Length: 174
Image (cartoon, rainbow, N blue to C red; front, side, top):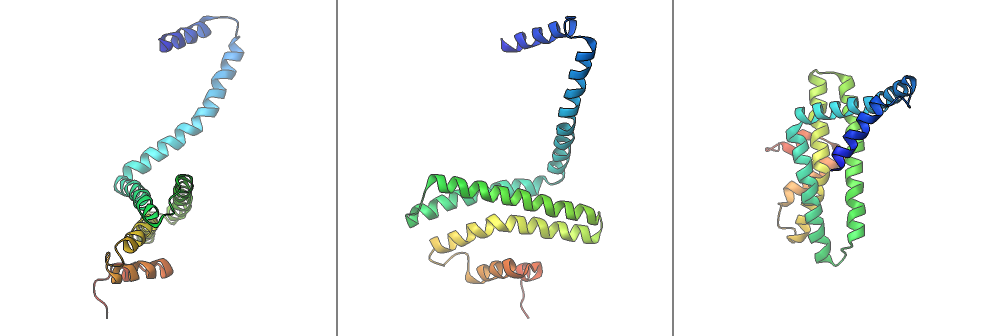
């Protein structure tokens, strides 16, 4: 019912002579000035999500799993606080969004070449590894340091220190 009222109000505003043509034009350009940049940003985000569908799905899954494992971990340790959990998860989302956006802008400046693609992989692995490492560390403690195996945890800790993807994913050590 409210949709009908809203439509009728818009029709009345269009045919009513009280707002002058100049006022209607001003309203129109104000709307374009306000919603134009928003539409441009939304279009860019839609393009990014279509091109990075797997990564964006994985990051959302990782953040949800991180929250669930964090609740279990802190509940078992007797340190669970809903407000604190909410604050920490909002902070994680904020940090991931800001850092990823800044690094993605840097990557886009490098261009679509070998260096840019390599940097894209590093950015995405690093971004995914932030919540994944938190999950793995909590699971490692919850499993009495039985799982994941210590050598995997060592590689994760080393990657956090030096950022070497080869060391993280290399199956054979010299």
